[in-house]
Image (cartoon, rainbow, N blue to C red; front, side, top):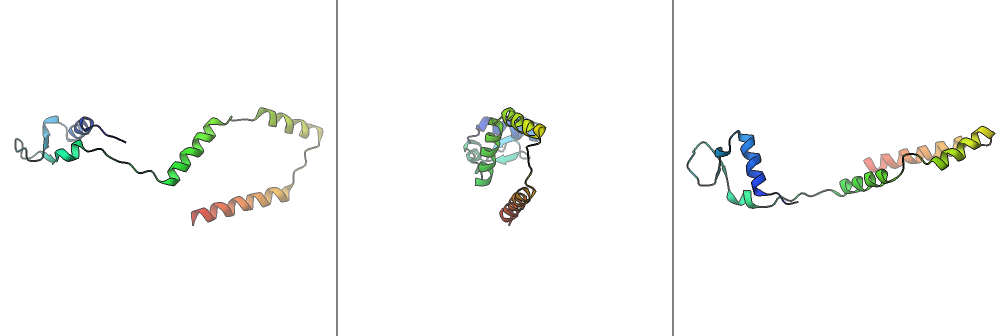
Length: 109
């Protein structure tokens, strides 16, 4: 990520309250002004993004691409419930919940 030195100068000036208070290193026109080296103003900043943050961004992108509701699936289960043919396997659900919880706990350690 490159940062334009002009935007840095403007941002610093706004933070200090006046543009004329930002000086190059060695400029003695205003002895009370902040000293900022020209190298700092002209260099580009680098940002390192962690692998976890990258993964979170990928997951968010996938979630945004998928539809909110699978209407076909909802219709299928609605029909099964109305016919009394949908059977809930409580043991399978409990096993899956436990697996998910253990998986989350392992990643937090």
